[in-house]
Length: 136
Image (tube, rainbow, N blue to C red):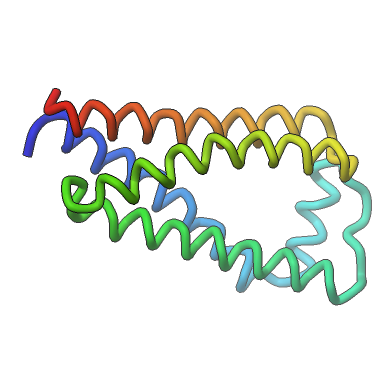
């Protein structure tokens, strides 16, 4: 394995493990989720069942993305086209994420941090994948 392939493997595993942390919200008590919501300055957490449903299912999907990245990291040469596709799609999704954050009234600090972190991580994956493919 080349140094670039090892770097890509490490990046995919780090992002995958980070995404797996979202699974904490699946099992966290509703009171803990509501407290975190308030601590972030977003007011009281909505008591409608749809709010908790969306919180937990979004966490489930983030975790599954993490599992996918961990799986792809096992053979970065074989899965290079998929990794490249996910990286470019992720950078594009960060722009949509910014738009969603702004139009739904999320705090500006949240919108900027979330979209730039998303874009940055996926850009890093794209860069590592390109270096890996080039054999650098």
